Image (cartoon, rainbow, N blue to C red; front, side):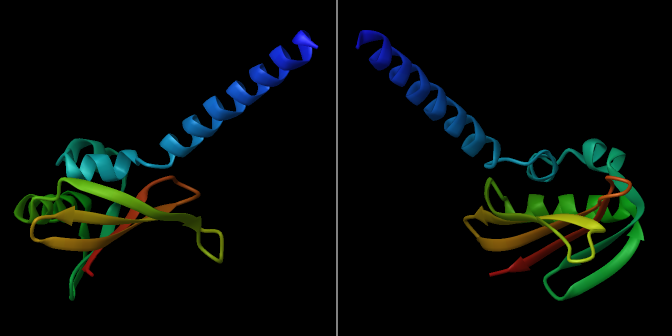
Length: 131
């Protein structure tokens, strides 16, 4: 009887431990962390040579250094301090992986979309739209 209870307790504890580990892993993203922390080097190392950037209604495709610096400048201006991941997924054609998050600051909330190539694992697009 005691062995059954000990075994149940072990499995329940293991389940809770693994559940907490999985849920906490879903709460952050290294690419978004780098953007919020204004770590251009991290983003540049993981980006395609040419990236598409959308901030509000402004769109442009340019060299990764220019685009990432523009995105970081915008993050600095808005003083984003935290984010919440809303969704992670793969495009219908299977070519891109994406992450959607809400960026929050005292100036407002923006929806962030970051798209990565599945083949090259490189950042292809950053989109920030006010919600």
